[in-house]
Length: 87
Image 1 (cartoon, rainbow, N blue to C red):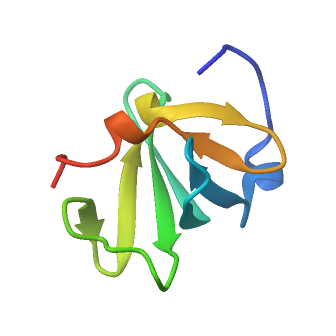
Image 2: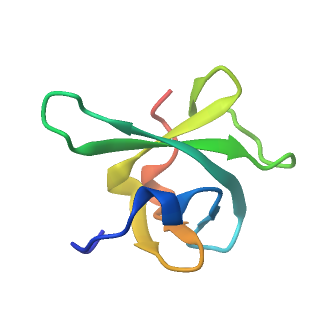
């Protein structure tokens, strides 16, 4: 993801999609490393039709590593190759 600044409040409830346009879900929360203050993961409420197998899950939410974020504009776009296999 390119360096830049955006307030966490503006990210609330943003739609999350992969680079192919598939609906992943909605941003529910952020996880920050308490030691470094760096954002580490996005907590996503998955879309109802999404197959969540292969995703790292906590309760009913998906955890997406910040490295998977390609861009943040009107929606959050994720790099599909960095999404699965992190369970």
